[in-house]
Amino acid sequence: MTRMFSSLLEAVRDHVHLRLDDSRYVTIRPVLPSDLDALRRFFAALSRATLRLRFLCPVNELPEQLLREFTAVNQRAHVAFVAEFHGAAGQIVAEARFVRSADPESAELALVVADDWRRIGLGTMLTRILVQRARFTGLHRLCGDVLEDNMAMRGFAHSLGARLSQVMRHGLVRLSLDI
Image 1 (cartoon, rainbow, N blue to C red):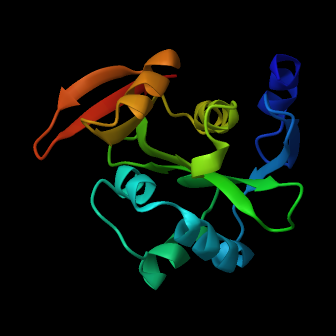
Image 2 (cartoon, helix red, strand yellow; image 1 turned 45 degrees about the horizontal axis):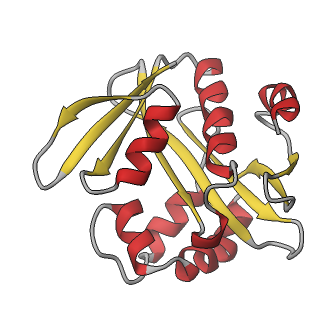
């Protein structure tokens, strides 16, 4: 996967085809308005625990308006990518995005990988693509709120160079990745 990294950096707008550490193939591409149904299926298939970690509270079903907002990206202030499994047309297995915040130098980062697609490099590749796009759009920092008990995400973020920037109320911590 390392040799693919140089092509990832060049492909922040186009489709990137990757072979993951477990030999499965995915395509990483920008989110499109036509992804509404595929995103609905993706989020519905996630475990309750994964939904809680992604949305920072218990979630049973995503509101339709939020799903529509997830497909309304402009690839500058709201940038989003999905990973699709090659073996099943339109099956999203991960999504990652950033949305610019009030601070012109930073954006809020969010990432979720399907339960049976973790620990094979997919989150790392999506994050690297987002970091490259963030640099391209003039950002200097990506931040994300994480549940304090989400040790997997905290470890993952630390492995990318993120630091704990703030302990917040309600069991949340803010992680910050300088880019």
